[in-house]
Length: 83
Image (cartoon, rainbow, N blue to C red):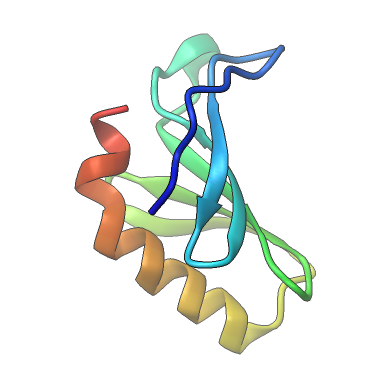
């Protein structure tokens, strides 16, 4: 897992790559948002809540890739919540 210390413009977030997925990680809960990850893969994007790990929204990602994304984020969820 590689998470460089880059902050987004709208909400405070970290951007990076996790096991091949381009990610934006929001953990601070600004504006009432729960901690979550936007992950972009080959077929689309998925938004995954971190606590508990669950799919919030799927934007065109194929089911197999979405399952893999959920599994990868679940494996790293404790570390992601500490960012």
